[in-house]
Length: 371
Image (cartoon, rainbow, N blue to C red):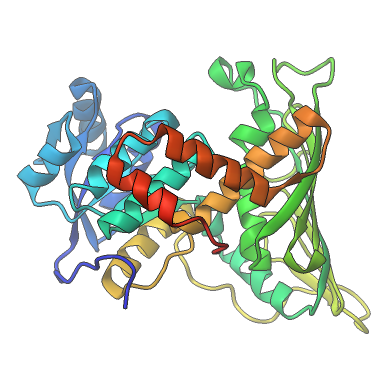
């Protein structure tokens, strides 16, 4: 039996989107391009922004408002897509879940692990699906890398090198822990996906070169221990002009049966023990939609089938915990256990929870490791 309510209506899913900013407009286009869904409502605190986004996409007949529950009721929506700023993810998702609506939410699930745990409890209590869109999982090349990794036997080490030099301006250049908090979750979550395992601990150092244009640390190296003893080493910089990597970074996976590499864009290569040289596997890459289109496609599929999606909130908590643990390690200079981060966040979530029923759910059900 599914852990969440499925949708049995065979017609295209009627979606209400919350958020009409830059990322919101990308989601509007992704929804418009998917024949299995229909955008019936758009919610934003600024009605003019919503109308402008719809006009840019050439859409008409979409209800606009400022209340998720009101627009959902008005339109007979099946589900909500939450594309608000991270600080609004928790209140918007909670309102939708307790209005009887499953939610597909942009990453991160929430700004903190404590709020993500509150969302996991709310999803369990409401019986509705909350899926987090970790869009980097939806690359056929990454899916192929995961398959290769499973055939390499025991994995000793996985490394990701990420070197980019974006001049964003605005809030990112003023953030603390900018690389870890704003970008590294993509690689951390991809490592969990590739290894099909969860992290145990991390030691992390971060620093900011004198030539950096960021206020916070733009460079970091983190060494994670995963279940079974595998080490995952992430090294990244956001002020690395010249010879930049792809946005997915450059990957190397070494196991008992050989080594696989991925440049973050093309198909991965593998050199197995006994092979003379590395080669691209003969099998064709899986035909899956990319990035947010892939998130949306999986959301629709699991709402029909009841299968657990890769971005289900209880699992996604561990990707967010990797970030929080890395930041704590960088601040303290100590190795940090992921379980300690989650246990502390559980206490914080219970203390801060405004809903009695969610607090009781948090108190009764501690997190277990899920992927």
